[in-house]
Image 1: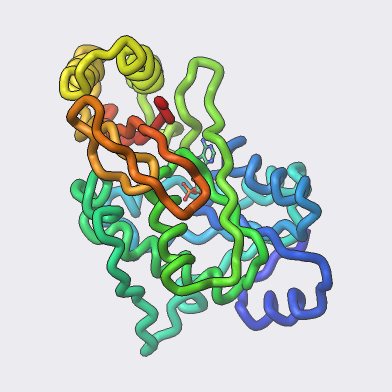
Image 2: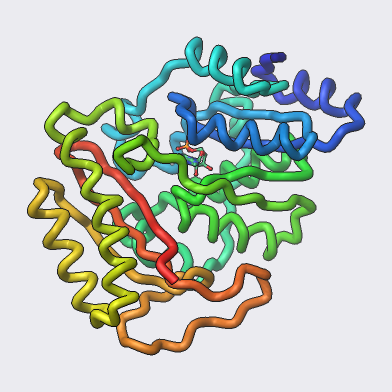
Length: 288
Ligand code: AMP
């Protein structure tokens, strides 16, 4: 695996390649969820490029940025095992050259206003800016992102559409621990008590799926889900049932789902964020 820290060196190498490039941007502290993105790129016969960049502009909470786990040597070993071809690990000034404002100012409508948008102001602007910048640097044919960050994926999809970027977005299903907890770099920060409690998130998402199938009113599902998370000792910020494409909250039974041109079909997705002590966890499940 080649490791590049400078944009110019990465570009020089990529410009000599003929095979398609598959790209998985990450913030490091890698786990099997990240590695699955690389494996998918390899299965698609791409040159697999991973980036590790803890993007300061997408952290609305400075303590979260400071405490974000950083394990670069272990990450490199894991990427090699997964068959990654190139690791791009730029310093901040390579991604954001001083004096150049690369901020993305797109109108994402509802997509960046609800859920994470409400509780993490500025997060998606920072995320869209860095993904756009990294796409501009790597110029991949395929972009691999996880369903774990469903709202992020929806916004990146919309950014690709609005900017007509020449890249195909590929969604990787959420990789979970055996007890259902969605893999996350933040899981290493959980206390043993919170690690034991955290699987309630996935259990509650699954309960919501069966409740929806049993025609429990959607407002009732949301209220009961929040109660279940609280009863397990978590502090939920939201538990929403949303249209899988528009991310509009669906509260009334029989709400008309959007017909869309993304080829995704309509769906209802349950999305949630909850604090396990100081650690903020998010997860989602397609319900219908
Ligand atoms: P992060 O390092 O948290 O920014 O995540 C980098 C990429 O890995 C994003 O596209 C995430 O959606 C994806 N990812 C993170 N956790 C998982 C998981 N458990 N399963 C699948 N993809 C994931």
